[in-house]
Image (cartoon, rainbow, N blue to C red; front, side, top):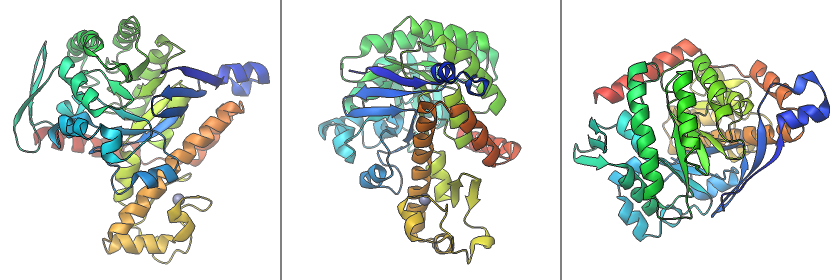
Length: 399
Ligand SMILES: [Zn+2]
C-alpha cells in the first residue's frame, strides 16, 4: 500500500528528446496507491471543508473527474465531532465519497481561525471560532481525530508560522519536528498514509533542515506547508526550489493550500505531485470563473447578453448547457443554481488542467506547455491579491 510509481519525468524525457527546450523542470507524473483508489499525479484536490465541497454532490465531483477530496479536521472536530463521523463508518461513508480522501491535522485552522491559542511544547489550547469553547490539540489527539475520520492520507500536527518571521520560524520548527516524531509514534491505523510537513517560512536553511529532519523519519509522503500565506510568489517559488530537492524522489510531495492555476504549473515544474486549494470553489461562488485566458468575472456588465459558454471548448455541464448571460443572470438574481454551475465549471477547469499537465509530462512537452500556459493565462494583479489576502488574514486573526 501507498506505493508511488513514477511513470514519466521531465529529465528522462529531456534526455530522450535530447533538446534544450525540455530541460530545466522537475515535473513528473505517476500513480499513488491508496486504500480507496489510485491517484494519477500530479493531482488537484478540491476542498470539502465541512465534509462537503460547497454546492457539489460527490456525483458532481466524480463527473468532473475529481479523484482526491480534502476535508478539514479542525472543522469536523468542532462539528459534528470526529467520533460521530467514526460512528458512521468514517468520512467516506458519512459524506458519500468513495474515492481517496485527505485530511489536514487541524493545526493550520487553529493558527488561522481559532479565537485564542496558547502554545506549549506539548500542544496547543484554543477557543472555537464558533462558540468560544475551549479545546486542545496535541500530536496524539490530532492523529486520533484523523483516525476517527479515516481519510487515506493524513497529516502531522505542525505549526504554521508567519513566513517572514525568522525567530518565530526557528521556534516553531523545533515544535513541528518534535510533534512529527510523536505523530509517527501515535499512529495506530496502518491503512492511512501519514505525511510529514516541512515548515521553515521563506528561509532556505530552515526549509532544508526541516526536510532533512522529516526525511529521517521515513514518511510515506511529504507535505510542504506554510506557503501562500503572505509571502510573494517569487518567495514561494524559490522556497520550493530549495525544499523539493531535499525530499526523497520516490515519495509523493504535497504542496498544501496552493492551487492558483499559475502556481500549480510552477509547482509541477518544481516536482510537486499533490495540490489542494479552496480558491477555485471560493472564487466560483463570487462569480469568478477560471479560463485559460485568466479569471472571468461574471458580474461584469459585458457578459449581460453574451451567448458564449463560460469557456468555449470546456466539457463541463455548465459550459455544455448554458451561456455566460444565463449564468450572470443567476448571479445577479442570487439564484443558488449560479453557485453550483460556477463551481462545476471551476472544478472541471482544474481537473482538465491536471489532465493536460499529465499528458504533457508523459509526452516530454511540459516545458513548452508551461511557457505557453503562462503566456496565455492573465494573472490577477499580484499587489491587489496580496492586499486582499492580507486583509482576510487580519480579519480572521482579529475575530
Ligand atoms: Zn466549463
